[in-house]
Length: 131
Image (cartoon, rainbow, N blue to C red; front, side, top):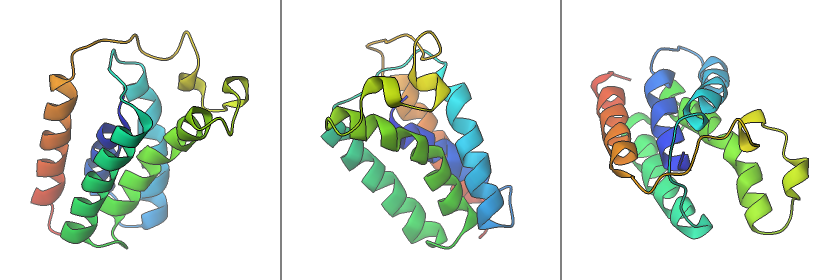
């Protein structure tokens, strides 16, 4: 799953929490089930750019201290190890998040429209929540 999709899902989940810590932990927990789904990953720099746009929107809309923002950060956080591996700073075998290894990681697909729709839907749902 692209990290921006994880962040958008985490943002929507974060609106269900009053505390930043609870939202952050729920975001982390949301990462694994979405990694199991078939998905397409992008290059590191495209992933970083898309994540920046999603977090920028969430931060501007809800604030950097909101549970919504912290849910997004929690959901995106596990992919930090993927970025470090992509940069050659972490060996694949040293990744700790379970769904970042086969057979747990969802199969690759070239279809990316569903991820874009999930991002839009989750950001819409998060925005409907009055922080």
